[in-house]
Length: 474
Ligand code: GLU
Image (cartoon, rainbow, N blue to C red; front, side, top):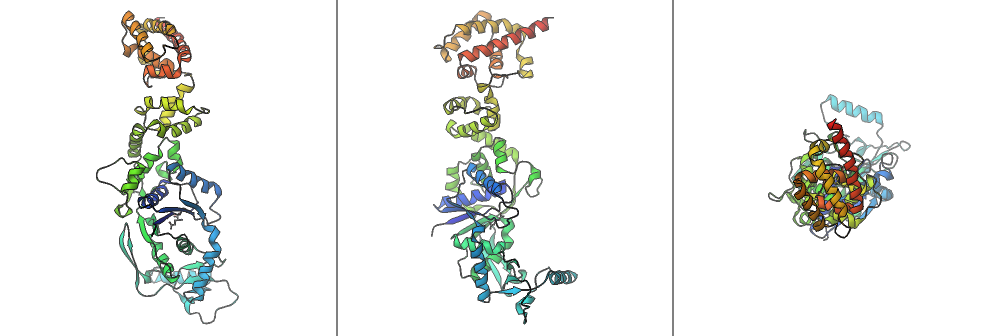
């Protein structure tokens, strides 16, 4: 039997990190055994679903590298099939028409509450002897009155639910539309889903769904209900906790590999290991080893992990993401080869790809201003003559010599002549080229920016430096 898992989001909002974690677990579990993943969009709530939200989910999954093998399939395409199955249960006497009016249901609930009972449908229409023919009705499932539902949950352990805890759930509403539990069961069966991995908030639906599988004569899939994500304050993760949309994490400069790594560690571990590549996750992950306690989403740990992934990735793994950020910052069509050359100098210096893109901007646009702290710290009168001498010397370095060796020779000559140390003379150069003293290696940036543009920027700083020193001299 080939394992088939499904991720079944309702397109009522963006793809949030909780959904992304469910999708990741489905993906890893299937990949681990060479199975198949299915994406099913549960779009039966027409008012709240729309194409833009579906696209946002697809984009989020794509960015995370969690594209499904099959799908997206749309639940709303199968409404007739859902209806047919409800009618089949009705025909077989496993479901019945319920004519209770809203008033009747309200009175029932009030009476139950007065008796301090759990509000539930009491099943009175199961036995209605003379059904009123012209009144609207819903179709309800005949939940067994005795016994219990038991399933071996892959995360929660064996779960027992007494049937008397469950009332007769509605399969078709009075307008004929199928309900969530019916649609999910029919789709899971028709899509040949073997393993349902979903949030713990669905645990209470599972006994009802198992009853439906059995009543329809179908195999019941295996279930894993994974604990929900919580914020650091202990409450369920929500917008209040900052970025929760997967694509917002992207905008803030997180790598998909780091977010996946972080999400897999929310409730699952493999010894002391913290850092996982996708291949390692596929090899090691097993939903049976997911823990039962709520996972706390901690942004600072994710940030740390993001820095680790940035440092450990090759330029080819960071290129696409850096180009995406640069384009958002207004750099049109950055050249991929050039991108690969500038990445190594920045990997050790940033924690996010947004920071990297911001740092890299000077490669594409000359600084329009200089960082105040860097100016205050490094542009002192005593180094101005050496800086001017260096600039003069650099003008004599030809385009052919404009490499590590040629630049180093020029710097050395000027340092010997003026007595200035690299630490002092290097910083004005960094500021001239990048606008700040936080930048990759000096010879690297001079070469990557190129001889002509470097000399131009060095001249601009010289004027600025001279003015500053004259002003200081009064
Ligand atoms: N559509 C449901 C949701 O978004 C998930 C249903 C399921 O996984 O069974 O929460």
